[in-house]
Length: 331
Image 1 (cartoon, rainbow, N blue to C red):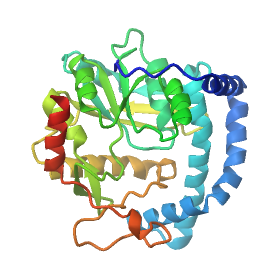
Image 2: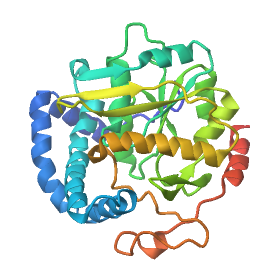
Image 3: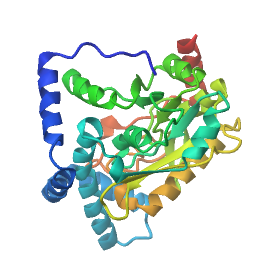
């Protein structure tokens, strides 16, 4: 696992973690029922997030009329609110293996048998925090990735919140900052598994690849990692079970000829895979993210000011400039 060890938690952090563990000791059906009930008012109160969701749906699913987008936004915001409970369960809950299903484990087993590590591409579905837990508790006996998972994360600005979240995450995976290229390469060199979620707007090291037909700033960081380490990349998709009483994680076969040496073609391919997964369960995707915040040079803004203020708009650093920066950091 990554050697990025957290500092010793403060007393207040330990108290918060103890309280959350106590809360998660309640029966899981009760917690999920409470989460679904609370999701209704929370979704109604999230007005600014709702504007972002509706703006994204209008861009990505223009085939839906306004009423259909409104209904989808309602379901999506409730899914996002429910993910607060799911995240707590992922970090501090009891054994959840009876509610989990892992499909495609053989793909990851064969990949790790090659000895080059593996990058898992995990899109931002709202229950994303469940991924390391499902990979641990639903894994076949003796799975080679047990105790060998590292999750690429964005650190919270609030240090106490970060301490709580990081302590929960580290029950099932080490964590590494999204800018720590050297640590990621060490993970892959050790034939371990790196969990990445590159389907958000990036203001650096990006190319503009189509996402639902709209140019979106798409990171090339995962491509550079795969190229430098020689490791395969596998899609890894999580969603709730059709019954709504658990979680299903599907690991797919390694992406062929990836990276190909053409960053735009590779980013287009990965975005198409994410899009296909979203269309299977659009209400479970994190539509509240401003995916089209950055625009190509000279392009008009896609979000109105009430969704994204003008001073928050960005133009990403070119991918080739970022590659030079990453090379310096990893040396």
